[in-house]
Image 1 (cartoon, one colour):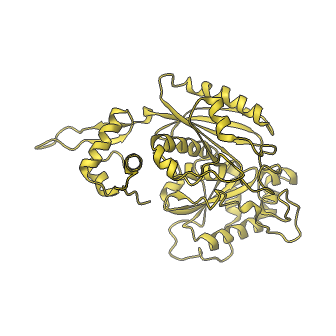
Image 2 (tube, one colour):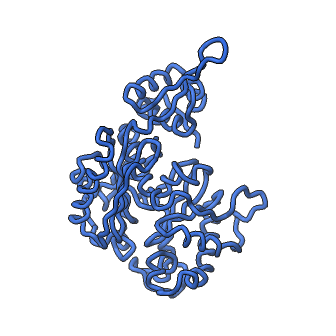
Image 3 (cartoon, one colour):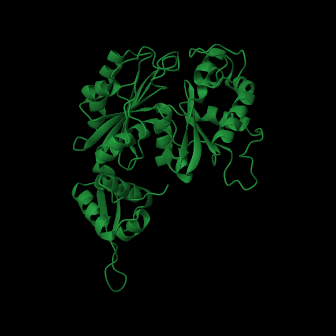
Length: 388
């Protein structure tokens, strides 16, 4: 992804975020190298770096001289310069993690809470956050990000059925999260958060154009374009689980029949009551057709398969797709397999949610410009970029 600074009116917080991201991606690095990458002057970079060093977000190191003159100081992110909490809320329970600025999971915790009500869930979150932050008693906690199943703001689909948080319609999510924790709060769909986490800290960092297929209780995904997650007009892009794939197939809570996630999801596997191997063989043709559809729609470098499913199940699904149908991705000059299994695992969701909070807090003006409340959601920000 090309990171470029700006001289426009809102430039200072935006440029600070761009400098942080450039250092995260390329550190240790020098002021001169940063200036070349982002298109700002060395003087502007030095001013931003000085501010970030004073605030403890960066570390400056200088090698021992090897000849005449001093070598330039190199910069890297200070992993302990700040922390954020990532929350993943699912129909099965709550997973939470304290993440440092390098994306490392410092501490994690979970609570089983099947189909938790909003009151119960936010009560549990309110106890989880202090439990995590006690692991770094002197650490600066920047904010909290929460990811949960979408889509949002769609009357026939939102908060309906076993793959969503049923009964959560109309809840002021961000306000409740901020009230329960006392932290700046940010929200995202779980599939977009997982794609963001994978792009920042996992296999996705190798690609600029890929599709992240999120295999969980339901089925979703997100296209990552030039390192950024595409969100769509209302923040719901990627809900491929509700593509009608089987004419006259199983009824779906969304009101259609034969939707993909009725066959390809952890919920579908649990309903089938078959062995994992038998189930994979049964759904392999549907899975293969879904991959070809994604490829023809988005032309990705690869499809990265991740989510809440255990790694061995994802590997089996990827193996079942060895003989994929023809598509625009069936190229001789491919540098990567058409389907790959994500490295980040379930933690990608929490890392992505935490990164969202870091980005929003360290660059609040940037966050304001690319955040919008949508009718029917009220408090769901969408369209954010990546974080340092």
